[in-house]
Image (tube, rainbow, N blue to C red; front, side, top):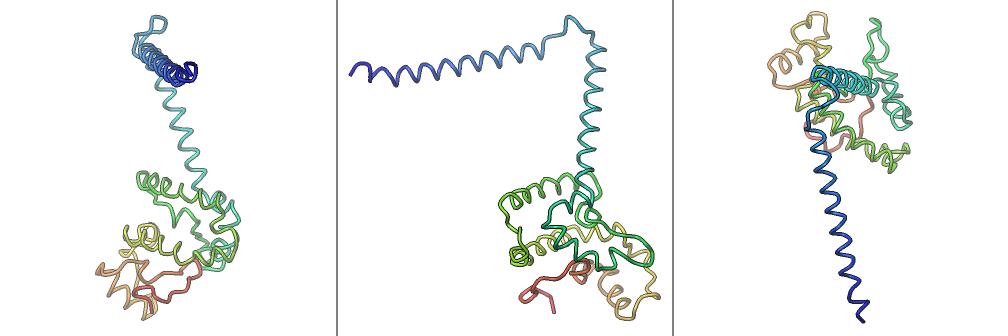
Length: 217
């Protein structure tokens, strides 16, 4: 009976000892980090820190840009066999001027802070890949409206920023547009009553079932 009663006490004592050792190690490490160097001069330490920062920043940006390419975006079959295949039949992929929009042109903001925020948001898509959320054509079609709605909302919230990175209302020559487009742009775009995505859903990818989508006819 005595041995059994002592076992919980021994466990707590061992746990307490581990915590105490961990705290001691943390304190010693902190003292090492804040203690002035007796081997290297301040200039050497500053230069080493600067070089380490340059290497880290260069590596970070290189990795960031590698994830910001069409090759990376279409590296999984979910994208390559669905939305990328659809893109190839549109004017954004092949046209008389030879200017082509790639995946990040439309789906990744160009300025750095918004780009980082978008990358953090997109990291959730890794879970979709792991759990096979849209790993078949049937699953993709089932989720198409939801996926499209997320992008439409993002475009709406930033005034179709990715569209306007290439298409400027100030540079539009409405005399070269069809009468319908000219009237629509003057009435809605130039007055800022609407933004690009309000009228141009499905411009680069097939539309989902639009029944019940507000404002869609």
